[in-house]
Image 1 (cartoon, rainbow, N blue to C red):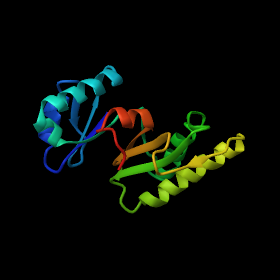
Image 2: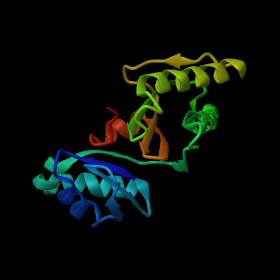
Image 3: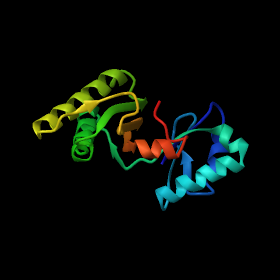
Image 4: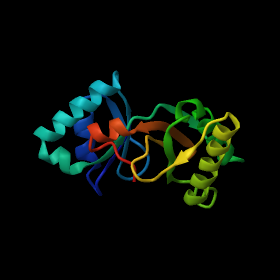
Length: 173
């Protein structure tokens, strides 16, 4: 899991998250990372916690259930991201999508909008090659390919519309 707090509220956020899983600071301001036993159970419990605890609710920015983490190649971080996105093509086939990168670190090595465009194009071409009709939409897509970087580490997840609708704190910037 990756969670963000509003500015300066990470200690409050961590206290609330630690009731539900093993969380720690993510190495960047207002970022927490952690592991939970059961993602749907965690999200439902967090929704209940936020409803009961207005201080936690005010501290919470957003939460993303990261499906896979990996190291970015020092010499070509884009290649690592391309491989991770390409591996998701079968899950995206037949669905509308877009790619969103939240980059922390790697200043000068990756440019967010260029990387998002390159990864979207890669996925588009892969889907076309396999006979699918890709659909990119930024207005309520079926899935968002969400990528978060923390220095040379990255996490990726497919965030489905139903998840975004069920939990107001699961959102894409």
